[in-house]
Length: 283
Image (cartoon, rainbow, N blue to C red; front, side, top):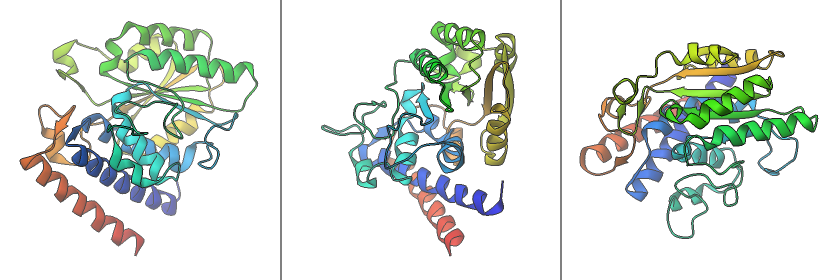
């Protein structure tokens, strides 16, 4: 990745994280942990990899994104706003009456949202269907399926994975956000997942593991996935819930956070730091 491109993506990450904090603080609470853990992924997707057009978000031959872990909607909304899919002013309406940005993504409400998600597991099946349609139509397009590691407790995920692998849907790039936690705690405490990469390999996926905060590695992994022609592909993001702010990374219950007191103060400190970074990089 060129240094100029990496710099632009780092600035995009900072802007997206500011948006996430401001959006959730404005509402008073929300799904911070799992949104923060995939900011770098969304920056790489929308800043470099995706064939999409903000002016024509429903163009037929576009790449499509399915955020199966729909509770991470804030990271998607923030990224879409930063890339011009809709006015940034919409972010202040998150999950409020009449909003076009509901708590979980809805393709009938938000420009740039390709699939409605939120009931965990179901996004895996719909992504498989979209990728199948792309194949049957002869489109040169990809479906990016983003799945949470806690979500893999759902049997529907593994049924969909078996289909994707069995049909060798190499145009469906499965990305697992392996941030090690879910709603009720650490994965290993709730239900031992064993090795997620090895399980995906056993299901027939060409599988890579990359650091979730390393955008060059994420970009390279996507490029490598696109060269695979004879099997399904999977990228496992070794990420941290609440990624980039130590206070929120270390918070015991960081799946959904109520913003008051110390949490609000730490969020404000993070926003100041991100703004200083952006100002320095754009000077």
